[in-house]
Image (cartoon, rainbow, N blue to C red; front, top):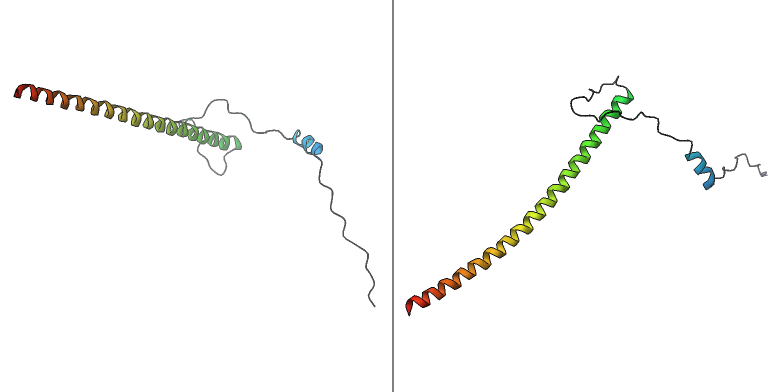
Amino acid sequence: MFRKAKQTIAPLPKPPTEAQMLEDLQLFHETRSTVSQPASKENLPTLTEESTMDEWWKVYDASVQQHEQFFDQKTNALELKQSLQEMRSELQAVCDKLMAEIEQDLGRLAATMSE
C-alpha cells in the first residue's frame, strides 16, 4: 500500500577544518581608519543620523578613552584610600604608645611629688 519514498533532502555540509578557518581569518581586516589625533570634548563631532562612520568611531574611541581614564582614577583613588587607612592605623598606634608613656611619666611624677 505505501511505497518507500526516495530521500529528497540533501545531506548537511561538512564543517570547515581548522586550517580552512585559519585561512579565512587571514582574509578579514579592520576597515575603519585610525584616529589621527586623540579626541577631546572640544573636537568631538555632534552625532546625527547623517553622521559618517568616522565621526561615530571618534565618539566611540573618545568614550572608551574616558572610561579607561575613569577606571585608572578609580583604581588610584582606592589605592590612596588603602594607603591612608594604613597610615591612620600606624599613627593611632604611635599615639596610643605616646599616651601610655605620658600616663606612666605622670604616675611616676605623682609618686615622686608625694614622697
